[in-house]
Amino acid sequence: MTAADTGQAQQAEQAVPIEPARQRPPHWPRYALIAILVLGTVLYGWVMWTDNWGNTYYTAAVKSMSSDFTNFLFGSFDPAGAVTIDKPPLSLWPQVVSVKIFGFHQWSVLLPQVVEGVAAIFLLHRTVRMWAGEKAALIAALVYALTPITVAITRTNNTDTMFVLMLVAAAYTFTRAMQALEPRTRTKWLLFTAFLLGCGFLAKMAAAYIVVPAFFAAYLAGSKAHWRRQVLDLAGAAVVLLASSLWWVAACGLWPGKKPYVGGSTDGTALDLILGYNGLGRVFGGEGNGNGGAAATGGGGGPGAGGASFGGPPGAGRMFGDAVGGQISWLLPLALIALAFAAVLGFRRLRRSAPADPAHRAGWVLWGGWLLVNALVFSNQKGVFHPYYTTLMAPAIGALVGAGTMWAFQQYQEREGLGRFVLPADVAVTAAWAWVLISRDTSWHGWLRYAVLIVALAAILALVLRKVPKLALALGLGAVLLAPAVWSAAAAVSTTAIASLPAAGPAEEEMPVGWDSGKLTADQRKVLDYAKSHASGAKITLAVEGGSQSAGVYIVATNETVVGMGGFDGKDPVPSVDQLSTWVREGRLRFVLTGGGMMMTDEKTVIERSKWIKQNCKPVLTAGESGTLHECTDA
Image (cartoon, rainbow, N blue to C red; front, side):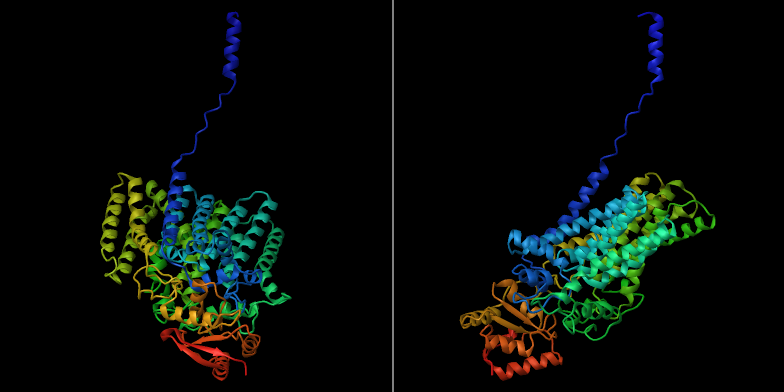
């Protein structure tokens, strides 16, 4: 090769652009997410290593549903298929599947809850990452995992865990829709969002619709489509939402064969349950929705059922009150600060006609609307309200805190305007509120307020000195998360929590034997043994008056066919007097237990059953607080 050829070759090599080496994304976010998921698994799953059966109202239903397809489809509380639980059965279906695979054990009942709780953490991370970035997403996931009421509710088998998962999944698909560039892809994800919201309805009925206005407003804020396309998208989503919500309601009304009475309704229809006890009645109050007894608990009455377990009186301060504050409000001021600054900045950008990112704007509207609408409804709810309902606010708080913290940190680093003071102010306000919450009962981890104060002061000092910004941010996060983390850990390992009234923090009363324990007391065992030994071939071993808490433990602890008369609170008109007479006449039922319920009622149906029992049954055994066993013959 000549010198000329060599020179040409070198020129050719120089003319070929050299592709720069691809920079691999850092691995630490993946490891951080795994650590958060493991943390959530431990907090939610610790209960599986205890002797806890969850909420026996739902656990009994899971066992009954696993025995028959009709019971499974409609969510029957008892094996005989007499009455359903007072909600749609979607949240219990995974528990039934788990029981069918692994057998009926306390851990197999609770396992789906753990999976659903961890899945919600993961989906929240993925949703916020698309909207506000990786670091904001990790903070959001951590905040959600360490929300005390979320830990308390996820370690039980109440309906809220599946309910929240469906709505977080809807937020994920909605965020995908807002970021889609192709109209058809956007519409597809939007319809999927509507379907998931409908699944939320099948977990907890009308409560799922509380967030629908937030999704609607976020779509209008983030859509760049022509108005005709927007109308078509929203109309299609409305159809899917109604179809995915109401198919079970239609099945209840159109089922051609024998089916259970819909518990909680006045006429046996799911529509009445939606519009009444589990719908408008929850918001506006009314018969069966007062805060005064076991009937209003929506998952079992119990110790303290008339006081703080109901969340305190309606009003603007409910979310910060004694009953609710320690469950959800630790980071609520921080989330509201982030939302307020986002609104101010958005308004300024609008006035300047500055270019905006519609998808990013939709995220703020979605999570801000989610938080505000739920807080408004919960604060003013006059019907049944429990602190554990507020777990629905946790994803929004996590998302807003994550995005707001990273924005405040960016302003802090840039040292521009008043924004640079937001991060120290966030730490100070949140630590001060934690001091107030902990001080309400210093006998329960009162030391924690001093620990929060010390870490908060260290974080603020580091932020002021500006020497190590990342360490200052870590200290700030530690200060705001320390108290809810301790409350969450305590909730995770608690052995006295009442699964039907889950709550973190100081326990009002310990759980008595037989309450949500899945174990028969000596008196209950005596009643059951007598009924079994004298059943004379009756298919229904025992019919129990007094509501689900009286009957549930018999279903959970045995393989006998036990009927809870009157459904959840004993007021449902099932079995009717005619049904009881038929059962006794046909030899299907011989023994009825009365006097073991948690409440008295003047309901007409209860009075009629009591009158029939007095006329057709004779006392054969008295078993203390468990009640009186009657042997019945049809007149």
